[in-house]
Amino acid sequence: MKNCALFGFSIVLSAIGGIANATSYTLPENSNDSVITQFHDDVPLTRVEQNETLPDVARRFLLGQTEIVRLNPDVDRWQVKKDEIVRLSNRRILPDTPHEGITLNIAEYRMYYYPPTQKGVAPQVMSYAHGIGRQDWKTPLGKTSIVQKVKDPSWHPPESIRREHAANGDPLPAVVPPGPHNPLGAYMLHLAVPGGYLIHGTDIDKIYGIGMQITHGCVRMYPEDIEALYNSVPLGTPVYMVKQPIKVGWLDNTLYIEAHPDLEGEETTLEQKLELALKLIQKANDNAKDGVYAKSQSGADAAQNLPEFDRKALNQALTALDGNPVAIYQRLPEKTLPATGHGSLGGYYHGV
Image 1 (spheres, rainbow, N blue to C red):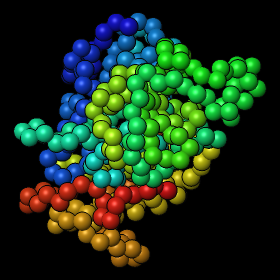
Image 2: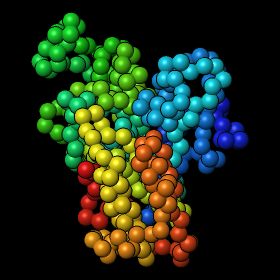
Image 3: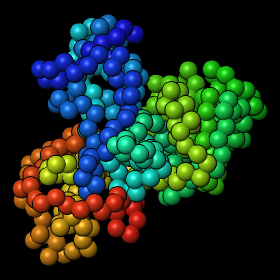
Image 4: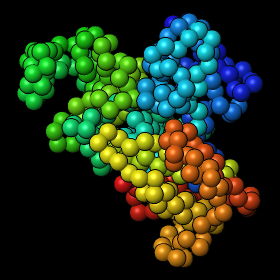
């Protein structure tokens, strides 16, 4: 594909050659803030230079297919015309987990890796798109760790998968050797989860399935992303596997909400989404008080202490479900707050 340029609403941000670290974010200076931003000049857009598809654009910018389709509801997924403008992702709210190791938020088809802090370098987080297990092969939740790393793995398809392929007229061999058509790709990370769950690359036949719910339970990544992760994480790295379709977080005294659709086979009503959102808003408000993680209130007392947020913006976010963080409340600047560390009081939020 030809190179293309990134635009803000009216400002050119950078050319594609300048976004080699497209998944790298600097963590906010305030440790209580949890919104990360890639481009600080508004919403990044790209003008395509030849006819292509949204998955082509997603592949070029290391985004997931579901992610880019949600951000561009008026663009034909399979026919993006030359000079058409495509919206890209920019801000993200970090999942509510400890800022260590790897977090997989399957609700947004996205991974967050917190590399060890280096002296003289601002703390970073790397974010990668990935595919997850479909409805009948669900990706598990909970805390685990990386127990093995394998380069150029062979694939030994489980008998259940071989039966499935045989029934579809696509029989599999007992062993698929390393190579471009190996579904595991060139790098594989074993998780300490019963059943043999993996984080791995992909073959050339399935590369456009990144960011979708299509795997047999494992986590599938773009080739360059899994290579970077493989070369960065040591054995024993903690992995938090969560499902957080709604996230709330602060940045510079502004409260944001980010909402994603239900996964395949799940269905929550707008009222249920709103109930969860209000609990998260209350929690974020409590956590911000006096720069400490305060004990969350419940019932009538909690409702009375909710900030006067923009309910219209909240409802729009819960209806659009495009994964774009929306500002719903801005508080007056306060005195400098002491650093309090990362993560939630008593652990991490396990989702719904």
